[in-house]
Length: 450
Image (cartoon, rainbow, N blue to C red; front, top):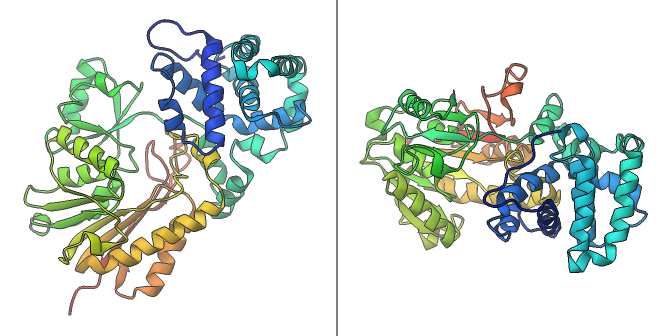
């Protein structure tokens, strides 16, 4: 049995947490993001509810298969969400946050204390008591269910297997593990070794990853990270940290001086900030995002770091509304995508997506590439990236683009990065070293003028 999730403030009854988790699961099933669902949870409950919700979402495939064994018909949405919540948390005693009997008792208590669930309390009690009696047989009966095996929708599993025939199982296993907290050091202001030493003196232990990253051995609130508010570091996964590094790779100080750079889909501003941290002050960076509220986040994040960019709320695909006609030396296009590479951090993504989303998002990516490429000066570069493991949003997208743009040259790039935990590093030697999310990178250079 794993350690029970921690809550802040006064102890909150487990049934109350399970009640909130079930409501969040029901919302995710309706298409609401896990982040939005958690925002609606009272602050006193949120830490414990988030820990339980993430575990449920990582085990929801197995829970739904078990529920199908226990109930001849799918229950109404909220009772079903509570039943699947209890099953997801209790089915594997070695990893259960509480004893299975406790989880069952508290789930039934949650039904009894929720007006909209009271009529289903006896049904839930019967299903869960049967589960406790017949657990081993019920689990065996679901072992051949692909969704139960991998806790991803069946279409997702098949798609990853086709796209990554050698490593598909590693990708799915990584997705079902929690990601650590990774930060990017602002090396414009302090070296990584110096910040790591400061943290160690304050009792905060971290290990280097990538060129500028530090991975915490134990995640904590940014309020408790020394020098975070002072702008010496930012939360950013190691794979995402590669964006600014690739865009500027190989350029001399003379070449980067005075560069005009566009971050075309900038919010919340992590990559914009990283580019600015790596550039001299004379460089000019424009940060664009279609959502005005998310643009405010960009401004706030840059202000904490003591950085400035020209932040514009506009659609990158409609340049007439924002572009002044001056060509850019570099464009960073972190395109909208399925987010299939960051499932470790956002376990709701797998249940929110539909297979049809891939083609729809690929069309958006194709259009953005088409609109932005003419804005790159001859000899300039465009970095295309997505936080996706699906080839349709990576290699396939770039192959099509290169076929239609003979003035584009693919420079040495990382291509598809698979999500990877530290425990996998030794076996996945062809992947980026260290802990990181799934990403795709392609660096394109425009043929210089003759």
